[in-house]
Length: 92
Image (tube, helix red, strand yellow):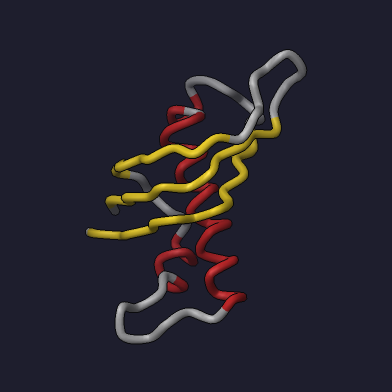
């Protein structure tokens, strides 16, 4: 799945790391947890607040693994915070 997003990313990580949240624009091929694909909002059916929160959480998990932790090769234990979403598009 391709994710194109512009959002604020922050981190919970080991002491001494830079965790200040900042706006980033990412376009990335990544795997989301299977449940995230089922909850992904349809263009024809706007998502409820709860659905949007679940999609944002799952997107943060997928981006954390694929981009920030590089598939487990770095930043072990890093938790990604994904807020102030200005854009979030999905494509297969």
